[in-house]
Every structure is written in structure tokens, then in C-alpha cells.
Length: 124
Image: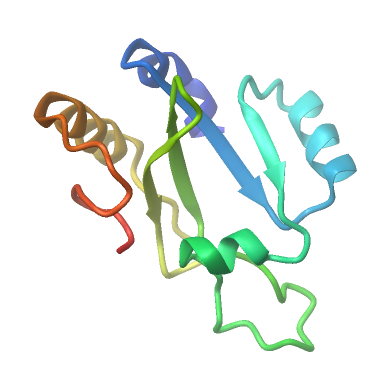
């Protein structure tokens, strides 16, 4: 919800906000409607993209009901649909600080170092 409140700040930088969960598309659609979310929430029910992006939470055992959950995070996507940054936390109870994400985004844009591998707070 905090991310939604700051969406306009990302858009003013030319950045689109995208969320991804392991929930079903129906669950994500209901959440989007209920909370009036103005950005896309993608579904990765099999956690394939979470593994590829390096944000799959391997601390959750396969027999646990939360198996497949990613580390909480934020991906920033530019106007061309390219992921320009991703932020995540190891602890599922924490979220990346929006202020830190905005600062890093501004720095990446100013330095023209927009890539997934560069910038503070990014997964390698």
C-alpha cells in the first residue's frame, strides 16, 4: 500500500511500478480492486521468475503453506518494459524502504547506470 501511495513519484521519473506474487491471478485481481492498486501485480504461482530473479525465499520448507514465497521486494520497470532495478529484503516481515528505492532510482537515472546489476540495494 505504501508503494501505491508513492507511485506518482516513480512515474515522474519515467519508472513503472510492478509487483509480483506467488498468489493466483484471481487473488491478485481481488487485492488490486479492494485496495485500488494503480500498478500491475504479476502472478508467479510456480515461483519460476522468483528463482530466476534471485528472490526466491529458500528458508521456507517445501511442505510449508508459504512455500514459493519470494523475499519481499520491488522491481522497477522503465517505459520500454525493461526491469531497471530490483530491491528485496531477506526477512519476509520487512519491505524495502520506499525512500531508499526512490533515491537509488534517481541516482541510477542521473548516472545513466540503469541495469539490474548496478545501484545500491540491488540483488546481484
